[in-house]
Image (cartoon, rainbow, N blue to C red; front, side):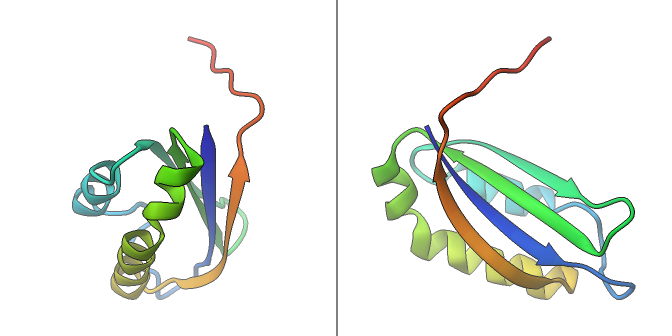
Length: 96
């Protein structure tokens, strides 16, 4: 599994602390997308999105559309895209 991690700067002008349902739906419809997490800093002006991909090829193939979605969401929510990084997930474990 692979992950794309996007970091955003938020501020008083930021519209929402979560992406819209439409944005989440569009991301999940990208081929090979396994899931999305959105983390909003409680005591900071920072938010992070994590998208999970079944293969590196799927993650790579999604870059152009993901960039478009990220830019649209950032403009709508009044956040600044700080950084976008890609990783291989080497451990994954969630408890119930």
